[in-house]
Length: 144
Image (cartoon, rainbow, N blue to C red; front, side, top):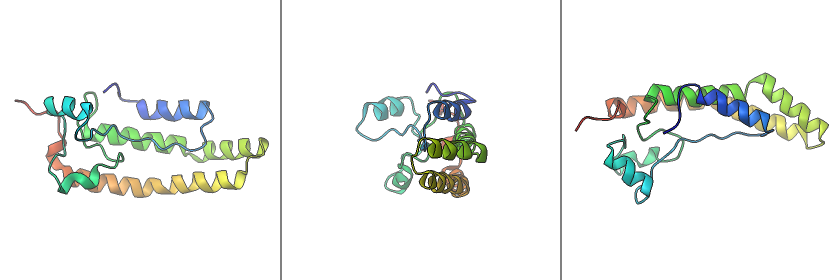
């Protein structure tokens, strides 16, 4: 709930600064039976709560809840921005060079980073499918 526009780029920058080799950012996902679920349910912020149909999206890789400061488009855009920034060719090459310099198997670093980079296309398609599926259920918090 503290995420705001620009968070994706900031996460990628901080992860790079700290020397993270692989970044797998996830969406805050309230799960039934948790305090987070109860809180978000009471605020009518669970966008996908038709079970069992919606369970397939409870993987931490889709925004199943409504965020206070970001729309569905906004939060997905931040995730894409984070991945694109962190897995840019310039940053990948920097990490591979660092692996080589520190004698940490640069080939594994290169293959791993390129694999994550290639997943960006798949993620974008999955997000588009998700947006079509969730439709207007994901719009701003519903009025009581």
